[in-house]
Length: 289
Image (cartoon, rainbow, N blue to C red; front, top):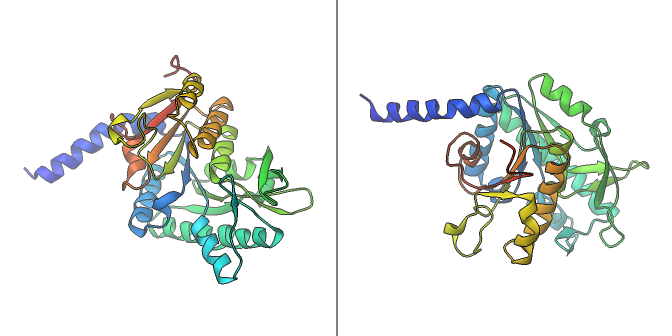
């Protein structure tokens, strides 16, 4: 007997219940961090998405593209400025963000999915009046605060068997373009679609009780636990806005949300299709399955 083939067959058999659980349901993947700039990791992510779509799971990919935006701004000799972790976005910068995210980054991802045998359509929050915004505040300029979501174009794309690949820009009533935080957009999309799961790819293994010890990974968190975890310092810094976004998604109808380590190849499959999982899962209540 070929041991390697036997192991592969065993893995597939164990994944079957999870494939059946998610088949026909929607998952939203927020794609960013190291998985977006490392070519090997990027290829693994795209393969995961194609596999999930092939077995009948409705996949939505939401992406940012900070490094590519920085590269374009540097080439134009425009200095990047960040306040409270968000890019200060002038009118000029917003035009560059639109060009890079809705153009280069989005179409590269769509093309890569297609080359792997998948079917994807590139969208932005400006397409189909998807993401209507107002300014977050004065100091950030054209950084968007979402005020209205229209999922019609995304639902039609999914219904026709395509993976919607969404870049994180939005619009206002004057047709201005807004740069929006990718976690914020992914959560809003997951909530509006009442998704089965929101998966946030990060550069950490998940939520750690001790940030310096990967062995202290917290596997499951309920929303009622979050205030205490913040007061204890377990959730701090950049993890707080991420928690806010996930809480929003769950309260708006997303069933569960995950933080996973995007530095690990095929982390999406390991989280969704194995008993052990690999990151931290967030739920509204322990009474839900």
